[in-house]
Length: 114
Length: 115
Image (cartoon, rainbow over all chains, first blue to last red; front, side, top):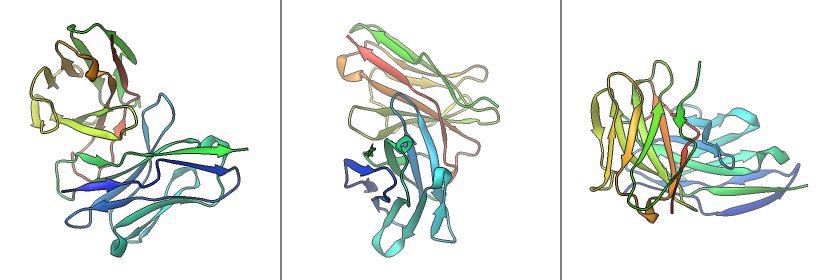
């Protein structure tokens, strides 16, 4: 069955420190891959997506993610975290040629220490 | 260009009442998806609609839940005879083509509380 795993429920980092949020997926083929961010009480905003080509994807707000086929991973990174990055982050996969519904992980909540 | 509009933002219903959640997709988007987010959980797919058609309702509970996307007007998610377990955030998303690689645009959600 298709699934997305975000192993870290909650991560706390200091402002200015680097960040890596993990995402592993289980899928029959290479899916489309997404990272979304959700601030409290808000909807989800797309940070970045991977379709094909270069496995290092740049997104908004200084985020990037790297697709590693051998590890079935799509980890999100940021070199220097800002206090405004505190939010919940969701990894999602979509099937190529599918009807478009996405499968989401359970999310990782990021807290930022001053 | 307005984004995906959902209303109401918050909805309180007593057990047994009906809840109606509305979603207007982005201009030019004819594919609408509804997701439910329970506390401490990720989003779970419920239903995928195009204008006047339900394409995939594999995530919808078999009873009390229905969805429509009429030719004119917003998409509606209806929950009849609500129970406490229906309390959740319901998100609508839209995309231009319905392909898995679109990456949706999400609305801000409707937070349903059943008392």
